[in-house]
Figure (cartoon, rainbow, N blue to C red):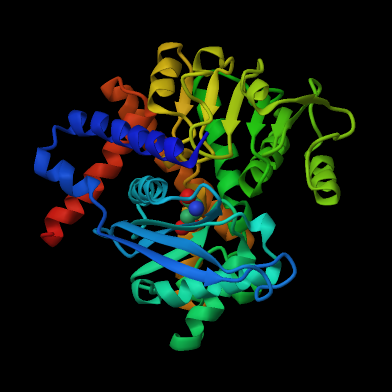
Length: 421
Ligand code: GLU
């Protein structure tokens, strides 16, 4: 799918979900317009001469970097930084908006933002990637800040990239760990942040399974995407007793009816780079994987993977959106009509930004928390948020997504009114 059509699709999907909630909340046109409009959109050019082995011996290329700051009524802008070839302003805009609803839903004092660079990181040397990241920070520096905008990892970025952001920002501001979350532990990162998103996805899958009377023990699970989120989701679900029958990465998938050993899969990927040829599994394409018979399907890759082409063929009873915007609005309607429960992205993967908040708090207090404290707080908060969303959904006879949006939009709206935007 081209970057452009994906961009149209994810913005359209996001708008559609919002309009449904706006209707339910009976918001006036002027309020809708304010909530839909980004506060600030910054795009910068980053010239570089990248080469696989260095950053100054290749052909000159100009990369484009973005930071969209959607809303800060409830606190500083917060959201990840994505390095991927398909990054474009429309996609970042939709994802920035989603962060506003996520932080509001989980009730942490942040707004929403997202950034990114359109780049294929596999074509860059580590040194070129470091230079690209640091130049991005140099150019974005005026709009970032501990109480203004705090980036974090997303698709294609990791704790190392966050460390480079910390270093570049600290050059002009003094040592500032709270400028970014998802950092390495050695630089003020939080215990539990790396696994937070996946752990939360698995925990919420367990809660939702209970509600549809599906035993998580021995439930068959299919996960699309085996990056940080997919891996930790799989690992935690396996410890909860679920059976991971299929996994995939950007290239292809693997299937094993009796269950895949996640640690073995991780070792195989570390050694060979891909899931392909994982011993004891059969190959399956990414498209086939989504349509496998299973109890729980977890899209943990990119936007729009469940769409009009496959929504009718999904066989799972429960879909848990580990990725952002993985189900298009038309597919969402199909799944609902077919009686499939969907735990929406703004709820399902909110554990990541929740622990980012804990990391920021620890940095401001200069007082690290223990792993168990972080995980207990994460689970307790997710438990409360899930029940609040589920109860509202039942009370109003709406789906979990509409209920989650209603809570989030209500909070942002009240903050806007109180502050007098
Ligand atoms: N990129 C993650 C997300 O989409 C985490 C954002 C953050 O921690 O600020 O939620």
